[in-house]
Length: 379
Image (cartoon, rainbow, N blue to C red; front, side, top):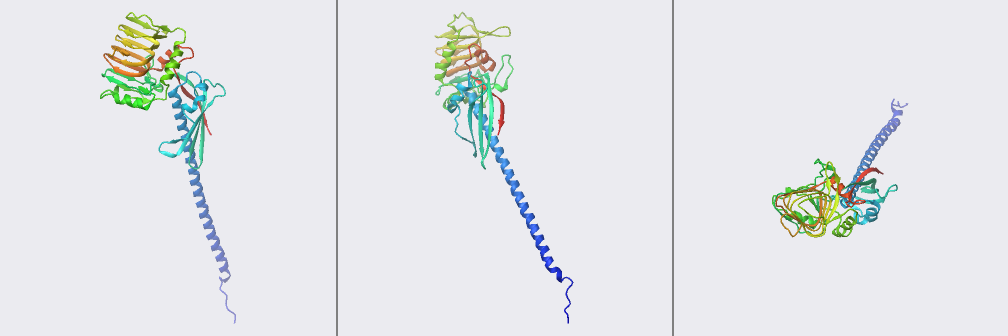
């Protein structure tokens, strides 16, 4: 007797094959999905670290440009900045504060077209996953500037402030009284952090708002500017060696040492070699250099740069540089030390335009200039 076969007997092997195919298909789709997810995560991570490297390179570029601007350049990038890059900024890698996995290094390269007036800053940013981006920025010499409305190049200063009728203003003010926000500097800068701390500590209660500009209030900062030696042994002799210097002019009580107004622009270099006592009215424009003490007790207006080799005392101390009465200085003061004892009212207001007038009195200029970015690319 024959056994009757099931109608589905021949399908059992096929069912197993189909089931296995379905399982393998699902497994393949799962693996593909996991691989795609992993790939997307890797792509996202690579994009993130690439952006971190780019932003780090940009941070390095801004840091280097600020260091160049604090130092300034007179008239030649190649000899003043590129050749001295190790002391201006350095080539060592620097870590971004708070982000130990991000670092940058910057080098200065001579411009191939005009190495005197232009240079190239090359910033390399490093991020995790071996990410690296490089930015090359071409910068040019721009306008004259001072590290601060008042700059003290000495590493050690002994400042003193008395009274409350003085203003040191680092907000860049044009000759017509309008503001130029792109040129703002701190009110007072020093060549060392110890000097900046000394200035801040010397300001008494209620005097902090008398020093304004970049960096908060009081606006006092350290700057990577020129040293006292450079000022006295290089910059001042360069100024005094220029033609047209007026040395020890006679003071008669109503004095003008250079003019710059709406009708006449004739700045000059005025050099006093001894003690000077100006009791009347005085106006001036250009550069004023004082070897010893300066006492101003009348109404005084000066536009440009004042350089005092010793202590600048704005106030009542006749043994130093003294400014009393109503005094307005538009431009900047460079001095090795500072004492403010104001009898009347006194203001020192930073002005790029006033420093440009001062620079015009000396061939090739002596007031250092900022750099301005004109083009950049990344790779």
